[in-house]
Amino acid sequence: MNKDILPQGDYIRQLLVKSNVTNANINFLLREKGVFLGHNEKNNSVPLLMKSVISPRDYSVLYDTQKTKEESIKYRTSSIKCNSDFDFTDIFDTAIDLHTLIVEKHTYKPNYKIIGNPTFYFEDENTAIFEYQIERENLLSDWTNNKTYHNGAITLKKVSEHDIQISVQQNSTSKETFEVNNLIMNVVKEKLFQKSIVSSNDDIITVKFNHFDNSSRIKFFYSFASDFNIYLEFKSITDIDVYLDENIESHNDVKIFLDEIDNLKLNGKGLQNHILLNKVEYFPKLIFGAVKFRYKLNYSGIDGSAIINLGFPDYVKSKDENSDFQISIDLVLNKQDKNQKTENAIRKKLLELFEIKKVESYEKFKTT
Image 1: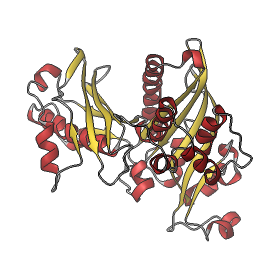
Image 2: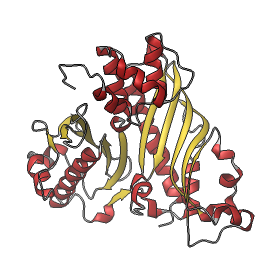
Image 3: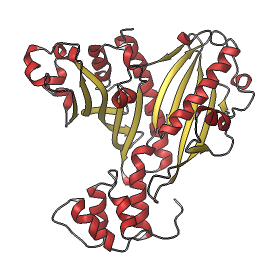
């Protein structure tokens, strides 16, 4: 965000009407200016801010708010079975030309580019990391964000407790970084095949939507509704994206209710206790696409809450049954503990623990 002139009038309206800027965000700024509204709606609050003077701090708060949803890190993980031992330095002995790969993927000029020439670096002999940043341009967007920056990363970790495997973690913050991650992983897989470290695509293990039937998928999700590590105390399931399988007959108890519905976006305080969602005989009809969990957090004396989103985003978006499992972690910490370094350390540890639980539950509930 490099703007020399603060927005006023219609320019600030373009930012305020975005869905990511909530009524609460706007009314908080108005209260700081001494303005209190009886009706907490944008129809009342937006005109007032359009007519007021927006300070640099006000604009920064609003701009950061509308970026938050997209820029939260989404994690996708997988494992690669290896035929033999190896050194990452031998595999990645040449640079990956991402600039060319991106251009070749698109028929027309892409709306983003990689900044610089990122390469794999080695945290230790068992860990290779590829971090990068993209610059994205959206000429159809408003002036507040027609050029934005997004980070992505691939982390490869060699594990050799029993057989040698590579644990893969993909971090993305936008659909473009997800695309770049796939380009990098295609190169990684090709190099592993060339070095005969991997013999077939069957050696690459990911958790996918179609690896479960409807009942086992629900049980897989519900396996996270427990105190499965020392840092988290499960509190509730607050959101579920539910779809109904048209090929399955509804249970007689709920047939009248469900037969007129295509999907449900459920929000509540303890959905795991809802009668529709906790009776096993109803499970075959229900398709869970995504579930949001709330935990109480206590990490090395730091208290707060962890909101964990688990799901198959490509199924939720486009009914893609080959969708990969994804996790995102939102932390709510006390003001004195809220800093990037602390949050990154907590997310890293929680992600490791969720990965262990994911593998355990996947092996237990997968049907293919």
